[in-house]
Image (cartoon, rainbow, N blue to C red; front, side):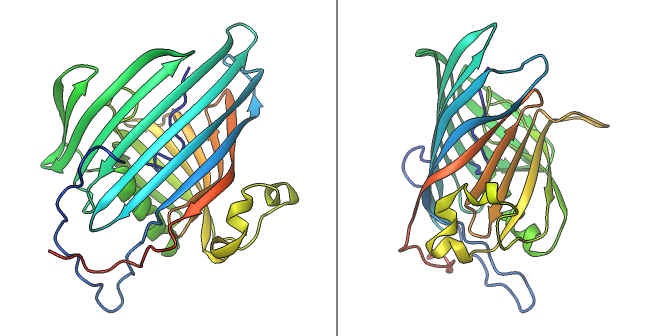
Length: 291
């Protein structure tokens, strides 16, 4: 059993040389929303078991997620993620998963590159390597696990663009946002239906227990950043009522940083407590891109 990276939308990466800068974005007209600037940052989350029960119940879970996110709407966005998780169960014993994910997303949200390697108990388990592009639908070209292509005719979005759309929806006071997302996870073939439920803006931790979590987010510049509680559910594509594959709960900060992580897989849930946050203090607000 492996865990997907928290926030793909968190999230969502370095996959080679930078691409050419996209055309300069137009300045917002009077009355239009200001563009979303995602903060370049490195965050470390310590994982622990929050709850467990049912057929896949666990005796314990621990681990760590490290996310290094860089870029802007001109240069594109790169992210490197490493997630090491140890799951303990009475029947299966201990299982250690080491997932390393690298992606690059064009600043205009049209191009995406992704590469993932996974070790299970120290042995290579799977690798995914490919590119994706949006044009007349979604086109995905895979190198691994085998060379192939596939298309999806639906309207699809990549992870960094998804994060910007979430912030825009939260700013506008929307309570839900439904989008199809491709993030290159699993075997690189899946497009997910997602549903985000966005709560009202919050100014302080809701309880003493929450106040003990994510200390880097309650200090310095982050203490004054607007944030909203979000529950983001991932579904296999289809119609009708469906049970989510998993649900990600988090506090969405206006600069794209995420706190109060909770990954809910139904039979068990894991929480992530941010222990370290390094923000790029030299990063500037969004500016028109040089041609």
